Length: 140
View (spheres, rainbow, N blue to C red):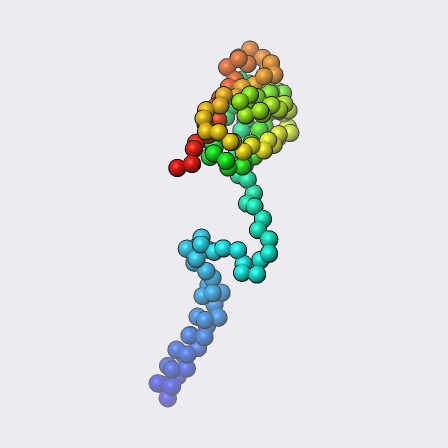
């Protein structure tokens, strides 16, 4: 009788383990290599990464931004104080950045190199020091 009760208990435990949601959850390694569904008819491009930049008298943070050649990104620039300019002449980027309203700039670098950016709206003493650079790294 005791042996039968143990077999029933073991069988019940087996069913509980199979029914537990974690038993059917894919492992992270399985998810990394998962492609689109077999019956999928559309492949939507991945959303571009967003790089956040903060402008304040008299600096941009970060001062150096690294981008991969050909990769689309959104530069999101927010001013913490006054209106600033964000100008990257060699990438044909020029926008005003107003306080309280983030500015979004789509960028897809086509050439590797280092590109200077600066504030081109006078924002007070120290304005001329408000600069940085975008480094576009060639694909490995």
